[in-house]
Length: 203
Image (tube, rainbow, N blue to C red; front, side, top):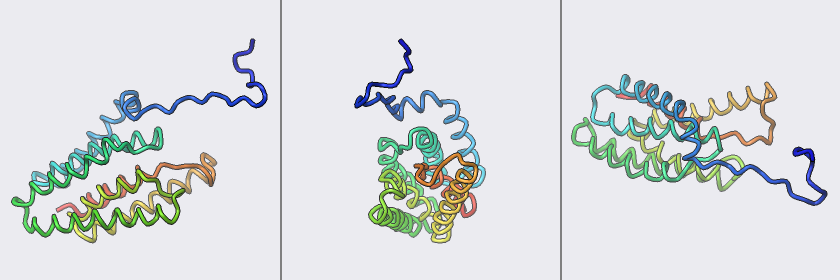
């Protein structure tokens, strides 16, 4: 019997299960490690030996995992995103006494977190097909870091995300690698846009 024969009429063909995010990380461990090393090294070079470096290094490492997983399975796993709220806030909070204007920066970080969460959340409510719940959750984490760097960094992060997303999506459409109905993961663009803003506006 031909193993590739079509199923009988009315039968539902079996689908390959979507691998869990842990399996994705294991299969793409080299890509995750290389990306994390490059991103964290760029952040360390730009920020220098400052108290907030630990917080941004966490963002770089966690963001590298999220980007690889989202590209592979279009998913931003909660076990990485949600703890990043507490970890990021704790590390930035620990940097407050050692940072000029640290108290104001931390307040701006909290405002940036709430604002970016609300921005993506409103888009999800209006058009759920364009923005996923995982993107909304990630937005709050990224807003925390962008807010720490100030309003100019926050705005640049949002704009860079939109520009990168539009440019790559347009290129995929032009190359016929994706259609208008294709689901393109947005998390990597959010992370890349945030990285651009951090590299530009880091103290």
